[in-house]
Length: 181
Image (tube, rainbow, N blue to C red; front, side, top):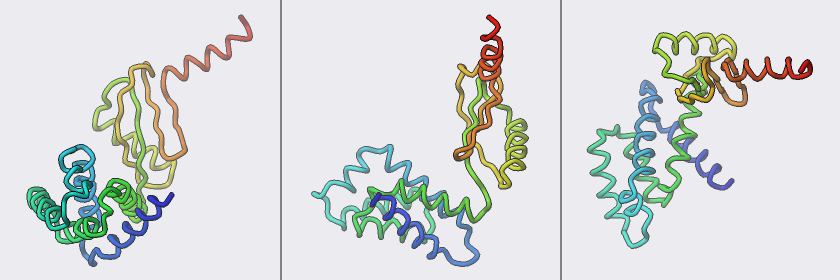
């Protein structure tokens, strides 16, 4: 619970630091890229989370990473604050919170699309547009493959599930026929 409160506070501070005219999306994407790298790179986490390293050493490593990533000044300054305040361990949660704020501002919701096979890009756009009409916001779907659904797809947006899978249709038919058998 405390982690979520910390993440919200830092995410709001970052959003407020973005100057007019700068795209929130760019800052959110750079923070997200760093958070994923931080999560996936054990050696990087070791430098930032091990108390044996001093802030000066951490900031030097952070500077090298940010240079390699060509980060903008807002994201750079924000990550330096997280290092100085010993909050870099919250970077993924903060990044997710920033992403939610940006999505809210853009009138966008994110969801998952589960299908038995890869969906063609044109079909994915059509599904997103159809779901956007249903939920009243722009929809951005992340695709996942699950052969167990046999065919069709399942879309999850927040707590809402749109199940158009063949597996679900077969289950419905089986339940309808079960009393007769």
